[in-house]
Length: 133
Ligand SMILES: [Zn+2]
Image (cartoon, rainbow, N blue to C red):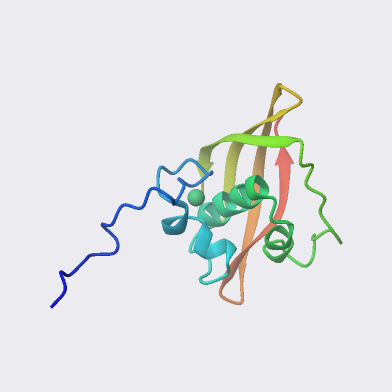
């Protein structure tokens, strides 16, 4: 009786674009990983979802996606940090080089890192990163 709707085509203005800069809506991008509805399929997808978790202040997801061997006991995201942009420079199977731009007290800063990931128990985890100044 009702008109069939294709939910993937439906535009909903209340759903924001994903902070990771993919151009997709957040619920079609990083959110399913952050909600742990599904695992990130690649190291790059995990990297993007961790950036998005930083932008959203989701410390729990950052810890959960951090490999046990290098995971800190806790993370304190500075609420004064505004994450502006993520640029992926290079992405390999288990390595992602990125520049994340954030603003703190009106000044822009860049975080340039070559991150290492590991695939374990069907999921990707962040291991560590070499910062590229
Ligand atoms: Zn995203």
